Length: 357
Image (cartoon, rainbow, N blue to C red; front, top):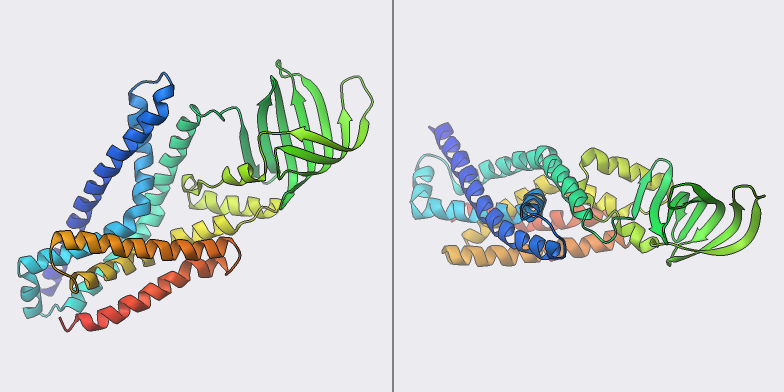
């Protein structure tokens, strides 16, 4: 009999989760498609492009608000049980509030593992395609920067010339062991520079110890020179700010590439910890939703209001801790897991009192 009730609880919770997810998906879709239409308004494109971009971006946005959806789902689920007097039936058959919550906690953990392994792989792939399509309409589509095992690579067009730049080591604002290849409009080699180091804090790179090679001429040596680029250290760093377009394996690959180049890995490390913490995050939000449901006015409006307020508090605590980690105030792993530990202890205190209700 108890196993039948457990099956009913799981099915009902998943149904509630899907309904709430669809509601938020619809809201996100409407807001996002308006943004895409506005973004593409300066380009002569088909009406299908805003739709395609919105569908590609939707799973990634939804992934970010899943913790909030878990909280709201647990609130509405317990409220529906209460309104139909099903909690009394469960208690009479040996299922207390705590036992029901334990079922939801295990379910949240399993769903969390599914979301970071299967769903995130799916959403990151779509996000990658989304960025590729959107970059076709970007004013910066003639510029490219990437990092691999061979260092930093930049391709850009300036005054009808194409520049291909490779730097092996990046230490703060200084790029070292640089090769700058300049091609003309026909992609013929025009000039090549071998540079020992460059300060790239601004767009006017300050080059040091340069060897310049031109066809039919002897190499020329200079102690210093200025090279203009569309990229500086901030723009290079921002190129990798959209980590949600990389799956788990790609994130670890980027982490190793960043380490080999000397680029700070704190942001990408923080993002990886954030992804792997989601099962715990979902569990905490599930517990918080149930605790809130039993301690506030039991109407759907109040459920939504308290859910939003709790989510905002959680978000800003997580965000503040993340900033501390990225800015090297505390270890990166601690900046992710410390808020989870804090809220878990708070929720456990609330759970202790839950069985009395």
